[in-house]
Length: 120
Image 1 (cartoon, helix red, strand yellow):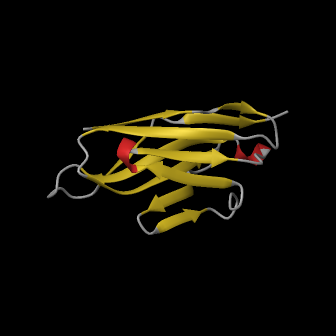
Image 2 (tube, helix red, strand yellow):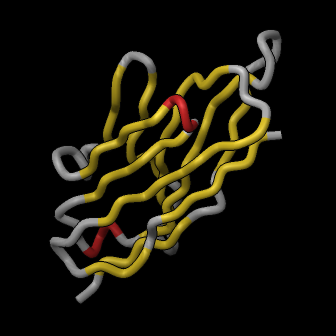
């Protein structure tokens, strides 16, 4: 069983910054990729940023403003969000795609979600 715990959300003014963290615990043999998604009221969940061994990928709406990074030793993924806009307001979810044993198939796990509100 893998558990993800997120932290770092909150209320920030437009143009401000926040840093989200997501730490995974439990039985993890290897991590294939990690990511951040968000869901605004009345909208579908969308991918914000992904990080793999090969690099990173960002949604067009956050390129140049958000940075995803990870600490492999801590099984933790971060999302640094700068120049925040009101349209960034959403619940942000982290996601880990892992193998829990050498022979297991890939499995996906979600964090509990953290609210980010950008408002003056």
